Amino acid sequence: MAGQGPSANVRDVTTLEKAQWALVAYREEIQQGLIEAQAEVARFTNWLEQQRPQELASQMQRTKRELENAKADLTRAEMMQNNMGTSADTERKRVQRAQKKIEDLVRQREALKRWSHRLQQERSLFTAATSQLAYRVDSIFPSLEADLKNRRDALAAYLATLAPKSPSNEDRST
Image (cartoon, rainbow, N blue to C red; front, side, top):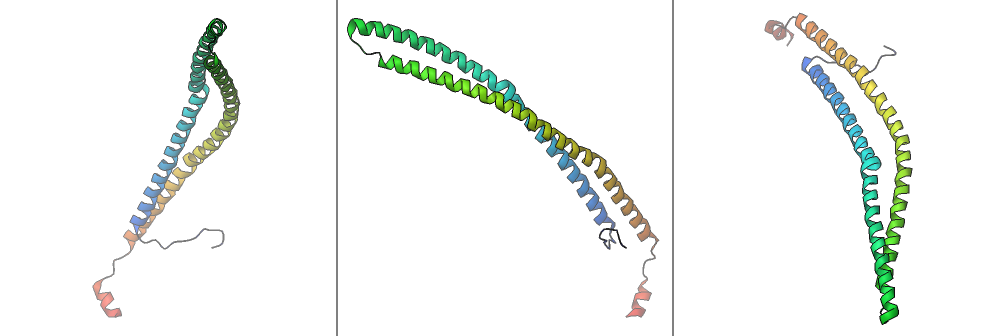
């Protein structure tokens, strides 16, 4: 018939039962995948917007203290250098390292802000796509499962009405 999908000559109820259970398992697998994907996005969002900024703030505080200590040590070393002729190169390098580390932390903080904004945009797209998929799974799969059950029941009823072949009829045909 035109307009219909492919047909199958199914004469075994267990085949339809297996197809029905496979469909149920597939639906559950899709739903579980959606849950896991949403949880992973939530974990990453939490890391990007909560945990990492806190880590950077702690690192910034420690590095500022290191810079203050390095500057104090440099001042003492320069005073000693004037009095005793010693070098303050080590202290200068510590100050430079601390300043560079602060600059790196500032860049990381700015990058986090950019990533957070971008993540919000991408998360909106992800949420829309997964919501559509979840809706389709929730609306289409139950009707497919019911259709398979109805076909299975109809086939079982049909097969029950067929008269079994008697051995005497089979012997005459051979």
